[in-house]
Amino acid sequence: MRQVRALWHVCTAVVAVGALASCGIFGSPAEPVDAPPPGGPKLTVGIKFDQPGLGQKTGDNSFAGFDVDVARYVAKELGVHPGNITFVEAKSAERETLLEQGKVDLVAATYSISDARKKKVDFAGPYFVAGQALLVRKTTSDITGPESLNQSDWKLCSVQGSTPAEKVKQAYAKNVTLRVFPSYPECLVALEDPEDPVDAVTTDDVILAGYAAAQPEKFKLVGKPFSQERYGIGLRKGDERTPKVTAALRKMVSDGSWKRAVEANIGKSGYKIPEPPEVLDSP
Ligand code: GLU
Image (cartoon, rainbow, N blue to C red; front, side, top):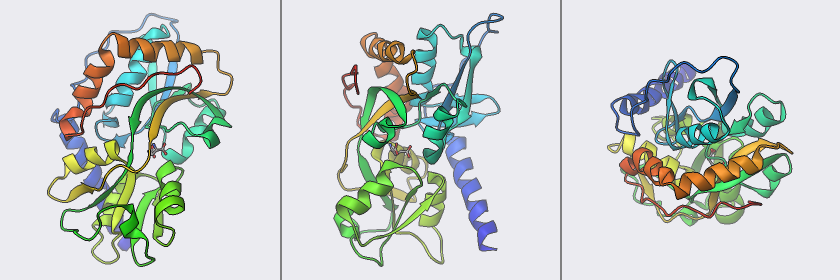
């Protein structure tokens, strides 16, 4: 019964977030795409489907968010017509495997560049720098930052295969009880669970800002960001397209498209618009 209720809550959370996206609260409306030329190059891109402002499935074949705009820009620079891009869901824990198994060409999914991941995949970037933060219930007053959580009776939620889940335990709150789920909307449900709620959700501030803006009467961000999450485009190890993706990201910044995409997708959550990071040859 509890599982059924939890599932229902996940659905309503996703619907709430999705409804806001389709009302145009996050990002710009999808533009109609002309038919692609026959035989043109194709690209499969792994994105998040449930992160408002960043990567979101908003309809049968429509996707919105900053990562989606970055992916479309990069695809254009690789000579791929927008109609030849296939977006597939890349949950946090699946990103390396999707690339390694050749199921996607690129991952543009709030994907932090890390040494552990670099052993398995290549990155182009960084194209955005976020910081890890905490999301709590609107009524919570005794959690002010990660150090407040360093007791086993505090429950913290994050997502399998994400960098924040590991970092918070190692660096800030060794004693906290960590619960991990496959994706973030399940953490939002757990935050509201009437019987056994978690006390906080941790991941990147820009992701949490999207959820808080979608349900401001329920959730708020607390504390200062406490890590640097440098987002990169993931590619298969040795993929020859990596320098081209790097060049595309640089061009996106220099021609103003980066700023427009950040403002259109992320600005409306109230997140402070950052400066673009320097896109590196070896990120
Ligand atoms: N940027 C972090 C990561 O790559 C957290 C966000 C996510 O899970 O996508 O793990």
